[in-house]
Image (cartoon, rainbow, N blue to C red; front, side, top):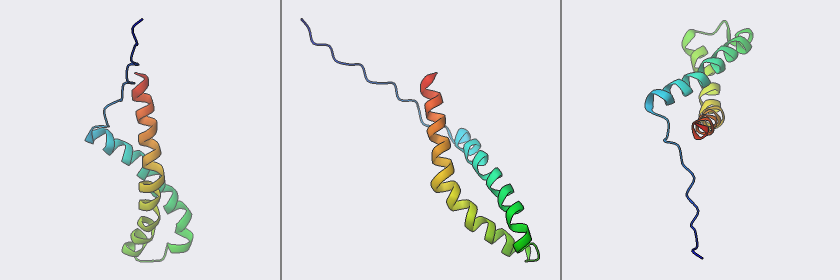
Length: 82
């Protein structure tokens, strides 16, 4: 009998730059909106630049290390099914 080699699983192509932009926006927008809502009582009277600094100090690490990787993994799972 002949030995058969298993066929490798089809790996989906990585997201295009446009898909990555959409995934990143999907992560950033809700995080910014929630941060503004939650932090306005604390930082509302601050100058706009300091409010933006405070919000981005929270949003960027959460998006980069937690949300975007999970969204990309979900995208790849969906792409693998198709």
